[in-house]
Structure formats: structure tokens, C-alpha cells
Image 1 (cartoon, helix red, strand yellow):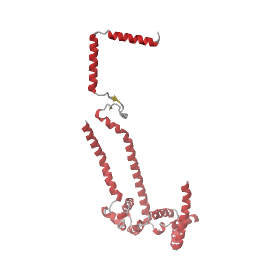
Image 2 (tube, rainbow over the protein chains, first blue to last red; image 1 turned 90 degrees about the vertical axis):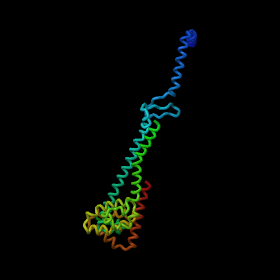
Image 3 (cartoon, rainbow over the protein chains, first blue to last red; image 1 turned 30 degrees about the horizontal axis):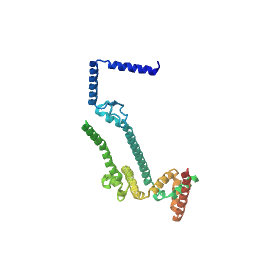
Image 4 (spheres, helix red, strand yellow; image 1 turned 180 degrees about the vertical axis):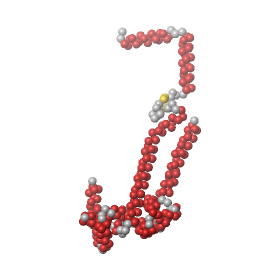
Length: 137
Length: 152
């Protein structure tokens, strides 16, 4: 007996068995099927539990995160590191800017209190003369 | 459930936007810096030579001058007079001239006092046409040294 023939014999035996069921058994099976279908219609489409950050694909059943109405909030969790990074970037840039202003203020304060003529300091030529003095040393 | 969610979003949005709107308001004020009338009497006294130029000054320059104004009360009467005498002249320099002034000041203080004074005397003794000639030569030399750096 090969495999196909064996399968055919099994199917035939099951069909014969189903036809030989008594009417009470058939009736109870029919009622149970009806009840199960009615329950499924009342419950609506089946829900699937997924991890909070897993996004539902288009057309997939609604996602139940297992946290009731708060699940949607957990979805925004991925934005927190980005926001923290942006805040840190702005803070560092602000701090550097502040340090630079303080450095310039200290330098300008010293230039203003100095005896040397401002006109000379502001001229490239004075820089050339200072360079010459340095080389002469 | 839906109404509760909408209310939560609105509340969270308002909470998140409150500091943001404050920051925007502050940024608007700090974009131009404080007005002359907003300065304290001590700051106005320290920065008196700048009163006429204050309104048109960039906010960062104002912050720098306010920093200097904070040091003004610690100066002797002679120091205060010197600061006032040079303040307006310095404020009117171009950004390039200010940069040069800071560079030259630092270079000058790397030299001994005699060398510094000698450079000042030489500068003051130079006729204008000679200053112009030296300035042009210095600019050309700077441009020549910058060119290969830019090619890198």
C-alpha cells in the first residue's frame, strides 16, 4: 500500500464514521458551532499583543499593548533621546558663546586701560613693527 | 476614553510649550539686547560714552560692554577716566580693526616694555604714505600665506 492509497483509505473511513453519527451528536455539534460563531461576531476582530515600540503594519489588527489607554504614550518614548540631545546641544553652544564674550570683555578691558595708542593697535602696520622688534631680539 | 486622551494631549502640549514660549519671548528681547533705558544707573554711568551708539549695537556687543561695566566701579578715578576716554573710539572701530587691536595688544605684551615703546614710537614717527605702503605690503603677505592654506 503506497502513501496516497493509505491517505485515501483514512479519508474514506472518516467519512463513513461521520455519516454513521447519531442525530443527537450531529445536533449538539451544530449548536456548539453556532454559539462559537456568534461569540466571535460579538467580540469583533481578534487583537494581537505586541511589544510597546513595535509599530502595527498597515491593515494589521489593532495593537493591544497590554496597558489600556496609556499604551499610545509609550510609543513616543523614542523621541526622548532626540529631545535630550537637542537640549544638550543648545546648552553647550550657549555656554561656549558666553565664555567667548567673557574672554573678549577681559581683553577689551585691558586694551582700553592700556597706555598704547588705540590707532596703533588697530593698524596692521603696528603688527609689522612689533614683529620686527621681536625678530631683532 | 477618547475625550480623556485629547485632554491629556492638550495638557501635555500646553505644559511643553510654556517654557518654549517663555524662551521665544526671551530670545526676542535678547536678539536686540537690553535698551539703554533698561540699564541700571551704575551701568549707564559706566557706559556713558556709548549712550549714542547703544541702540544700534548687536546684542553680543552689549553683553560684552555690560561685563566691562561690572568692572568699572573697581577702577580708580584715573582708570575710570581712561576707560571713558577710549571707550567710544574703540566701539567705533570695525570688527576687523577690533580683531587687529586685540592681536597687536597681545603681541605687544609678549615683548619687553622697551621694545613695545620703541614700536609705538616708530609707528607714530611713520609718515602716512609709508604707513599705507607697509599696510598694503602686509596685506599682500597675509593673502599669500593664506592662499596655500586654503588649497589644503
